Image (cartoon, rainbow, N blue to C red; front, side, top):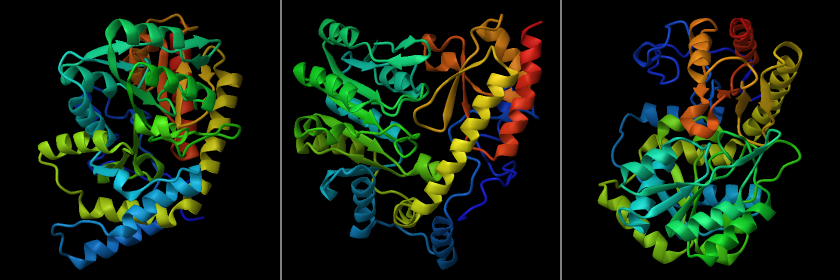
Length: 393
């Protein structure tokens, strides 16, 4: 194996957002963090080797990338998803939220409507509102634990609010849906009909469970490509979030020019030397590592599912089709959201992401990150059992 995923690595005292800031967030110091979506695994050895080479060189001046960088990015999406892209489509940014925020400013005016589907990754709401746009929510519909889009509601709200942008989360965070091609076609046709540009956040696209296939929105047709922005990054796939490197595909030259202009207006010029090198090394040499990781995550999911079924039957797993995040339904337990949070943190000493962070539709739910060594997940379940017992009293 490229890395030992079973090995528990102490991340305390490394300036880790996940581990070193419990107290400043009002959490117990001995809490077990299972919240933010970064992994407790070392990145591929090829990435570490490349970063060590740069570090030893000792000069960290202004840097840019060669054509090999773009080849690694476009090659990844060609070989894994069958999506043939062009180098000139790519804008490099320090993050996907940075890119979406720039796109909102580039393609809409203050007061314009931008649509999302809650419960959804919470920064979507904040960047819409912080950019003084109108947030339009078309909530996902949950039927027996299976989430779907409400296309009638989407169309009605697009018409009523003159929606200009649609932010799609694909695969969906936190509910774990991997949208089918048929669902994406229906959505895309609606957006084409009403002149809505689709920003598709596909950062979790490398984590798809057996039986499901990820379809890149822009790959469906030239028409869809012409009205979309596809947001990608190696950060989730290879645990590189701290290196702040994202690749944004914009096939339409007019849209790309507008977004690029807004990015440059921020003063952003080039990515850092470590992020560029890590991205290229990961896409060129990280495939075996990823394959091993996905097998390990599947084992974690199997363990979580079995543990809940056997020991905590009132907590229901919303079966994920993708991502390394699990959406847990606590609604059968007799506690409010606030009461549950208190017991989880004070009795269980567990730090999950509260479902309400993702919108009011997340009430009754918690999101947890299973990208950790199995001993950590087992300890989390032991602690959850303590909280479970307390919640039933």
